[in-house]
Length: 169
Image (cartoon, rainbow, N blue to C red; front, side, top):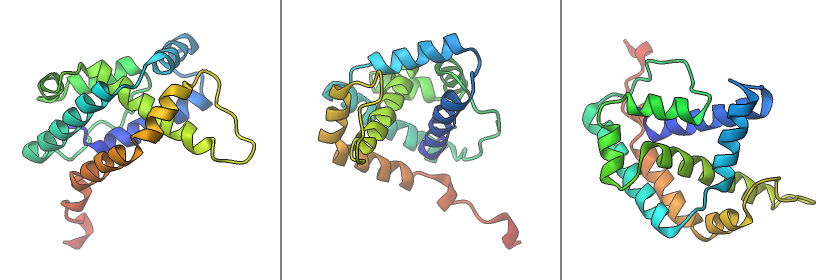
């Protein structure tokens, strides 16, 4: 079961790969980038995303499944969706929050992109990266406290804090 920490790691890996490698195909990376760039962050979407994140955190706690057996990091939105949907309970948890798996992933990636752009714009001489929506950056800035709360909640759901150190035996 992917927890929020694994989701964050996956996003970071995808972003890094999208920037460094041609990836699965440049056309697929371009489609994913275009989908993320065109996604519009809204209050309703954030409410659904928050509900979905809590449901996934609760699912991880209940399942006790903290291991990420698959070391193969997905490289496209489609691959992330397939990986999430293959995890028991994820689709039901997301649908219960009013989101599809794809919408959850794209919302999460759009928030990540907007947060990175927001930070980048605080740097001397910075400009908005091409394709990034300033409206989404503004949305991120207006809701930064709420998103920080989601991050704290997801960190409290991280399995790392509950896992004993294998070397302690």
